[in-house]
Length: 138
Image (tube, rainbow, N blue to C red; front, side, top):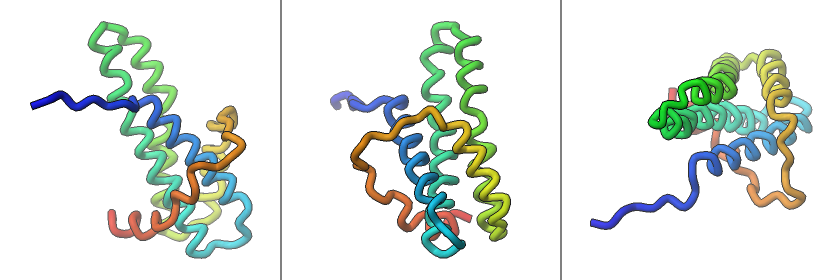
């Protein structure tokens, strides 16, 4: 049996997910009132933040193996907000609490304000169907 070689590491995956969240935040900011489209975007942001959080342990595993505990802990602290805010958006979305969603997405935007998107959007609209996926998950 041959080895499976991953060409894209967890860091590249996390960067792609962060860019997708920034794109979704920009699209959400243009929405006037809650509808199915805005639910898709908010659900996508929530699910993606939780997915970003799940990449952290895989990233720090190499550092912990070498004994860089402090570096691993700092990295975990740096990204721990993703799970908290992702869960908060998810709970608010299921309760249809758009005030909390607006406040929480503003916090997410503040955390990711240094992330630059490329001129051309190659991500498309990855949030389509995220609301149905979120409802099916719960």
